[in-house]
Length: 460
Image (tube, rainbow, N blue to C red):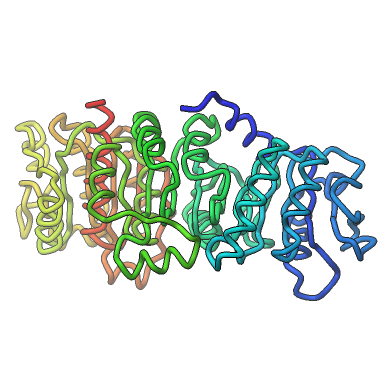
């Protein structure tokens, strides 16, 4: 771990007294103007917003100044959209003004050519001489709803939540907070870090590991600057906060694409497999998986063990889910005698099975109470660590009745929606203690990741 100075610097960047948008103009299609408008829409105090542009007097009502040094107020953050060749001077002006953080959205640096590499080295030297930290270049900025910082106007949620994100991909740093919000999941901060010429993945991981506003960390990375430091931090942070990492560029083709995207040195897939295993980070392989895992870690308690009880109104579905659970290292729970007796009392003896997986049969389609009684019985069984339930009943009061008993079950509960039901009935949003998936294999994989993470925490 570093001495904490970087964390203090990032605090000033995420909670700035003032923000300067460098390169914003009144031209149609100007990105700086787009970002400036986003800050205003998000609710950032207009009196603490400034434009830096040598040819403008004001942009959408915000006063413009020729250089950052001409700004009269306190500024802790600058967001830069000026042409590549002007960026060294801009960074120097920002440093002389005392601005703590400069986000460089301009591209064409280390990811492009030798001149870009030279310019990138120059701006780092300038910033380090004057105590200014850089994010980027080749990025889309910072999202921090509690400070009204926004990286994409008009679409980012205004609500704050406990998820922190850093990403080498600018588009993913926008996409995940927006997509997650549709499930009631909100972010504390998201950082598009681009080429990481100064502040890098390890700095951001260290910050999020100690950030009281962040309980879950997600990341998309194409490479790593300080490999040993990142490994050490990941292992330490994983003991208290889950880290969901989507590592891009592990194939030869992906590695070449990553190099042209951010100039990243990617590392081999075999090395990264070992890193995941030894640090406790959760390996993510797609955007769909990231949202699946995020939903689980956001809403569900960690399971005590790997024993799962499966409930289905269709025997075939229950068997298929059981196969997936076994494949992913989960154990089909052995039900207690008391639970078996209780299930024999509430489940009709016609086309059903009270062993695990529990098959409630065709009658469950019309009788919501069958699910309620079964879930209640399984929830009390000490040999069951989590419940995986297919949505079988078509009754309108089904979820209302089920949710009424879930508060008494302090175990992860996952519902799987059958394709037929999804076509005709609206799905509820996930909530504390309950997650929803559209496929049994996806649900089993999610639970297996939670089990593996809890084992890491217990063993370390």
